Amino acid sequence: MSKRFGKTLTSIILLLALLFTIQPTNVLAAAGFSTANTLTLSEMRSGTLETEVDVNYYKFTTSDKDSFYKVELRNTEVSEAISLTLYSGDDATTDIYDLNAYVSEVNSDTRKLEPNHTYYISVQKGFFGRTGNYKLCVSEIKDDIPDNYLNSTSISLNKKKSYNLEANRDLDYFKFTTTSYNSYYKIELANTEASSTIGATLYYEDDVTTDISEIVAYKASIGSTTIKLEPNHTYYLVIQTGSFYDRATGAYKLSVTEIKDDASDTFENSSKISLNKKNTYKLNVDGDIDYFKFKAIKSGTYTITLANKSGNDGVEAVIYSDADITQNIGVITSYKASKNTIKIKLKKNHTYYISVKKSYIYSTVTGEYSLTIKN
Image 1 (cartoon, rainbow, N blue to C red):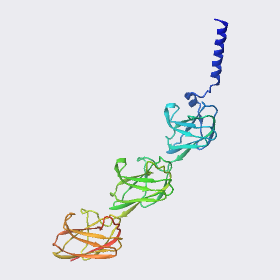
Image 2 (image 1 turned 60 degrees about the horizontal axis):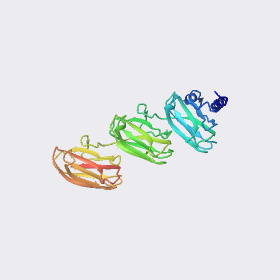
Image 3 (image 1 turned 120 degrees about the vertical axis):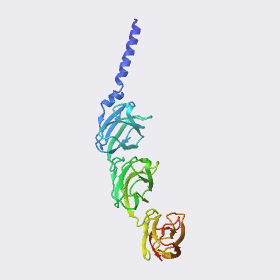
Image 4 (image 1 turned 60 degrees about the vertical axis):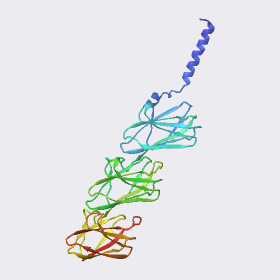
């Protein structure tokens, strides 16, 4: 081997050795994960990207609570974008999501993480990143209401309580059991502090396919629905962001109020009504229908009077010869603060039926009325 070739080979070896010595030692993912710095929850941590290929690794362990965790990245001095990746384990294939923070920008992500689990974070330059300082913080946000059917929170009837949507992806699951009465239930959702629209979905049972009704409450507004529910049955309510595009967080109030129905709303369970006596009832909610039945004690003409005592629109009574909506034999309509009468011939010992409801489908009617049947 010539002296010139030997000197050239020696120079190449020395140059390669020098290049390897200046490469950072934390580029390899495995080495980075194994030496990750431990973060204290809710404590802001400062870091530095010293070179364009620098990667800093951190880890934190969640509590035993059912909590959300907010990961916040602040680009305080980095000359271009920086990037953060959250991992579910010490393996680069377990990434959950990425965050990018541009110059002088703060970016964050809040979502539910597994209890008692160690997560890992890497921070490095973004696509056009350079070097500089940043700050990092992981904060625990405890969830006030479970987000699954199994652990649904029981709510008491006729009481309004405050709750909170802690994060954009938060869902609050509730359940309540109806009484043994034939009742309506008013479900009211008050959006007191939530940052955007929120919604409530009522389910017949703990199954997302059994939805019955939905309520929407816009920012600083109240949404409600009134519905008849089965006696002695457990229903479920789920509260969440009102639409796909909303990012609602904040406080809300929820209540389920029982409204007992004073008369049945089916032919089958029609309430008995006394003859020759003024009987007072109430349309408890808009859309309520009251069904009654009576037996004619003799054949002849009967006078039926309907008085609309406090309804805010027309009230209508329909007389049927049988428990069949097609067997209509007379109609009475009484408007607000008025009464009306019909005379009708009936047969002895035959059972007749009467339904009372609002007279027009587009009107809104609630309130007291009286019904009198004289022979």
